[in-house]
Length: 396
Image (cartoon, rainbow, N blue to C red):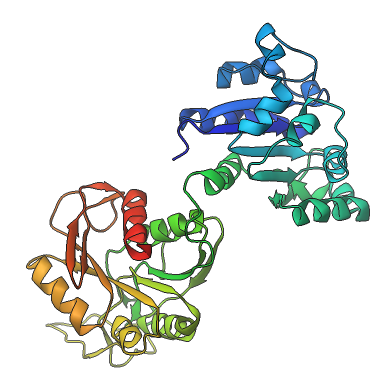
């Protein structure tokens, strides 16, 4: 969790400095202990007082701007040494050059040197400046030294130039911080594949067979796995959800698409979690033109789709962990235990769609984790919290 984590925001003299007020506010509302360090040039764009009001902490600009307490705990040392994460944004060409070459001539650069926490930096400047070879070389130096480089975005810049160099949205910057500190990185080196969302089976050019899945549970699993350091591939049906930070997304439509994408990638994965609601049946044939309404009833011949989870279980490699989901409306435990055996899975996450707060399109879930030798019932919780518990159960 980020509550109580010490986050330092280093702000240098770019027009995008104003965006950092929202970043500071968002972090404070999440319970973080937010400290802001500004360069003198940054103060030309926004006042330190603004950040002091938002964070309830003193803002440092001058290395020698000390209070009596600072004489004991020298700020540029103590802040850096006790920080949990350090974000520098906007990072100008000047501050990037100083950091790349160890120049420490102001409060921001001197605080960076003793820091031993995750260091994030987001370049933001005119596109021609950003593309300059020396700036790119300085960014590469920082990347080699372990800085996480947050890519600037393409767009209309304050100078009137259209190009790369725009500071990303505040929510994205906060998400990078969350990825760095919210969880222990206990899944580093794990290759994880997660399926999510519904599938769509075409009847004709207009109509489809589908289901109510929103994809929220699968996306939560992908998001939390990435925050814990895993290499995550998310194979998803049609959903209206943003791709979690650091996740490779593969979009599919039909059950056949899902089968092909999952099985082709499966051999290289350590953990596979099938959270998607994949159609069990698909039309025998798809009409070339819209099926016209007619008097009387109509029947649509259907055929079974390929069973993705069963195929994974039958071809499971040594050491690979397969987790399925079971969405039930009755006999949840019995049906899910039978599924665990039939599919040769290592774990089934089951829930009852008739229980309030569980299932599709809501932000909470009530999961029962079923293994060959254990059953663990989780209380109602957010889907991110449920994802954390599921992943913890998998990695032991």
